[in-house]
Image (cartoon, rainbow, N blue to C red):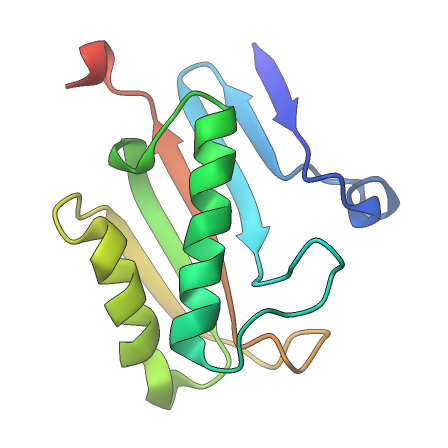
Length: 130
């Protein structure tokens, strides 16, 4: 079973991707930026952008019947590795007790230079919500 979840972004059909795909008990969530409903970037620093992304990811997880405790891997792509601790602080506020596998990568600037971070996650549904 493959189920698609959409953010409603026109980029999904233009580029050919989905916000998230559920394959069996696993949810793969595409890289997510700190954009608001109108597409503008929310937050001017790494911490606030990471918090906004985590809120968006929480909504995607909920829409698919998952939650943060199901996340087994997160990947953070930051444009300024010197500021990584700010992204880590926001990540830790959500995942401190969950402790998924983590990849933190320093990347070239994104298409919109206001984007300081993108994050993607993989979640696996826990049996009996354990």
